[in-house]
Amino acid sequence: MIKTKSPIWHPFTQHALQDEMIKIVRGDGAYLHTADGRRIIDAISSWWVVTHGHCHPHIVRAIQKQAGKLNQMIFAGYTHDPAEEVAALLLKLAPRGLDHVFFSDSGSTSVEVALKMALGYWHNVGKQRVRIVVMQHSYHGDTIGAMSVGVRGVFNAVYGPLLFDVTSIPFPARGHEQATLDALESACRNEMPAAFIVEPLILGAGGMLMYPAWVLREMKRICEAFDVLFIADEVMTGWGRTGTLFACEQANVTPDIACYSKGLTGGALPLAVTICRADIFDAHYSKERTRTFFHSSSYTANPVACAAAKANLDIWQDRETRQRVASVATMQEQAIEPFRADPRFANVRRTGTITALDLKRNDAGYLAGIGPKLQAFFKARNLLLRPLGNTIYVMPPYCVTATDLDQIYAAIKDSADALA
Ligand SMILES: *Cc1c(COP(=O)(O)O)cnc(C)c1O
Image (cartoon, rainbow, N blue to C red; front, side):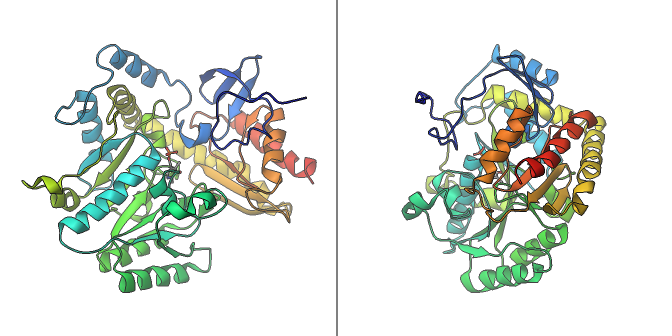
């Protein structure tokens, strides 16, 4: 059959290889409902954003209410309650020592803002520090700056000429943590970088690679010793994914700049924040206009998105939410445990509510044929899972049930036989 070319150009999609898209008409809780009446378990929270489930009633009501009142306005020279409330609550919940909130609309833009804040800081305090240190296998988004500080590979090889040069330190693989710390220390000592940007505890798109909190704490200590700004990209790790509200809490680390997005609105609307310490804001605070932080997007702090974020923050202030996260972490551990003894899988791992395991294959890597085959296998079982190459991971919304998880892990187990 000849494929008709879709008028819509979908993200991360090779249309020439894509089967017909599944049309979704409704979402509720952990489920997506298809036009042809099937129910799909959303085992990856629709690309890591939907934290409390689809169409959470408290968030939906907040959106409805705000949409009829004030749904967009300029945010330079003007402000509104939803943004003020979100900022105040965020500063209460984020690691202590973060003082100012800058709004944008996606994880990638929150990273761009963080990088610009770091360079603006050094420029405004009169020091020539511009280099960025990054960690191997990191992912920070798909805009040019975010790609520059992320892993180089098949995803961005074509755009290489546009990307700026960075210093990369190795991922702290188990038993090799010291090499990471030594590389960071040497980069900080020798290159006088402006900042180090890192995903705390879990490198998401890089393959759900996990490292312990003590390494995060040590990396922060090294940056501090050399006056290098520490940027925590918590776009994925925030909002309970690692077991705590933010991953940095587990290392008792306050970053100089933190990026939050994805679960910021509970996954209902696009919104992001970049939060920084007072000295970074203060370096821009001046009667001189040239020291202004020159960044904006048309929809900065959109009131409806902020209302959704406020509703999400309400949910997080409910003690039950944290209990729910803890119970998902426990259920996930119980579900993944049997795989540790299964010789067909390797690197069986969990941090907080996220599990991952690698299907043993000779043809590993994202473009190896195995990823799409696994995806198709899970699709046929009415499961939304999207392995990263041969790495299968489960990152469910917190309303997932034990029965849902049984179904997910039974399919993962069967996939090893089906694709052997
Ligand atoms: C998803 C992600 C981003 C990019 O967020 P978008 O909203 O897709 O632009 C940045 N950093 C990390 C760690 C991410 O997981």
